[in-house]
Length: 105
Image (tube, rainbow, N blue to C red; front, side, top):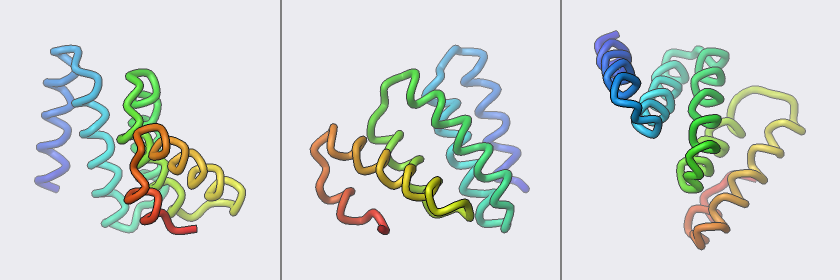
């Protein structure tokens, strides 16, 4: 609960300063918190919010990490595979075979 409160406060500050990537990073970590609390739907919503920002800001590393997280959530197989492929593409764009190797097929 305390971590969530701190992340929510940080998000508010990042939004006031028009720092989209900071906001996205907070959303990503809020997704992690929700996942740790067995709330996959909330986690998905937070990751998807972060993903939209990372896409708009052209941030391939964070895009890849977020797609990788989304690929592990309960969802139809096609959706999981789509996120896995998007993660692979993002990591290829930044020449990170080490991150590609960590993706779970």
